Figure 1 (cartoon, rainbow, N blue to C red):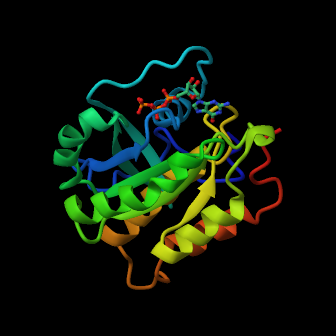
Figure 2 (figure 1 turned 135 degrees about the vertical axis):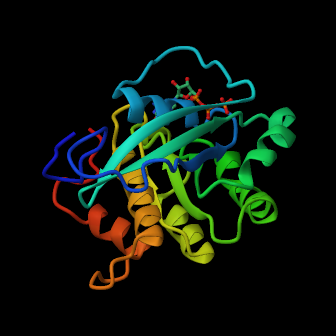
Length: 216
Ligand SMILES: Nc1nc2c(ncn2[C@@H]2O[C@H](COP(=O)(O)OP(=O)(O)OP(=O)(O)O)[C@@H](O)[C@H]2O)c(=O)[nH]1
């Protein structure tokens, strides 16, 4: 990762932001959209190609992200996308502070199901949960069936930030988690002299930065 481009992550200098608090963040979306791969890319900076092995149940990874000079501890839960695990994962929504909702840009039904996922989120999660929509597998542009504009339009309709990601190349992966960490930090510790933080504006401004978001 280029430290000039974004805030740093994984440790780094600076005081802990509420050191005992783990900010629960959950990855959700249809089976096979790349939730586990996204988390592995963020945590370990690698992509394990090959056969797809569906997540069974739920598991988590703790990760420290440094934003604005303070360390924010994220506890990132990777859920199983398969329908038969749904009732298990619902139970985890309630105390989540952030949800990353993924679809696969090469899989139309995973995009069509986003509305159903959002209905579930609104039913089971806290009202003020931070939601981010991610169109994953952006590296497979030749198999794309969902245009970037369609993701943008859907995200705008629900008032949530959106970006395309690639768990394979790492495109926008850190940005997604850093934006979440920044939002959580600002919500909990907004300084009087700080301008208010708008996650959608932040994501849009980062997407427009030179060098951002290429996946080749
Ligand atoms: N080309 C490409 N392949 C990806 C990407 N992300 C995931 N994959 C592949 O897609 C398949 C499914 O990825 P997973 O990360 O296991 O998907 P998941 O959403 O965790 O699936 P469940 O555990 O069943 O919910 C695997 O074969 C991955 O290698 C990506 O960004 N680009």
